[in-house]
Image (tube, rainbow, N blue to C red):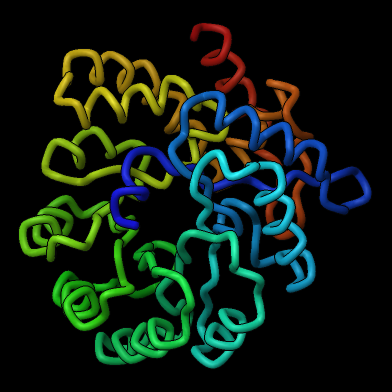
Length: 292
C-alpha cells in the first residue's frame, strides 16, 4: 500500500449546483481531468471537499461516485476523521470501503487532546479500520499538532498505519519524521508550496489542492523531484508558486474552485461558511492564469 501512496494525490473539491446540491457531472469531469493530468491517486472527502458541510448520506454518495468515475484507474483514498473517536469508528464500519485503498484520518480538532489522547484516538481508529490509515496532521485547522514522537509511536505499534499527510509547515518536524520513520511508513506533504523542498529532504509525495486545477504541471514537478531532476522540478515550482499562493489567499477551497470555474470544470459555488474569493483575489488569479 505504501508504494501506491507515493507521488501526487489530489484532495478533490466538491462541485455544487446553484441550488446547493452536488454537481455530479462536474465531479466526473474533475476526476477525469486530474487522472488525465497524471495524478497518482484520488482523495475523496478531504477538507478541500467542504466535508464539514456535507451530510453523512452525501459523503457516502460522493465516495461511491468518485469510485465509479475512477473506474479503478488509480487508487482511491477516503477521508474519515473527526473529533469524536466513537463517531469515527462508527463511520469506518458504516461506510462502504470495499473499493477504497486507504483512509485519510485527521487528528481530532477543536477539543485539542494531549499527545496521549491523540495516540489513543488513532489506536481505536487503527483497530476499527478495514483499510490502511493515513494520519493527517494539520495544526492550522485542528488546533493541535501530532508530534513526530506520537506519529512514530503509532507507526511502530500498528502495521495498518502506513503514512502521514504532514501539513504542519515545519520543515524540521518533517525531517525528524523522515529520519526516524519505519520502512512501511510514508511521509506525504500537505503543503503545496513546500512540496519541492520536502521531497528534497525525503518525502515521497503529496496530497495536493493545486492538483485539482494545475494537474499536469504539478504532477510533473513532483515526478521530476522524485526522479532527482531538480532543475526541471524547480522551473515548474517557480512557475506554479504564485498561483499556489493565490489559491490559498482567501482560504481553501475558494481559490481552487475559482480557477476550476474559469477552466469550465465546475461552478464557483460553495456552502456557507465558505464564500467565493474576493474581487481583488479574483483579478490576481485571472492575471496569473493569463500569464501562465
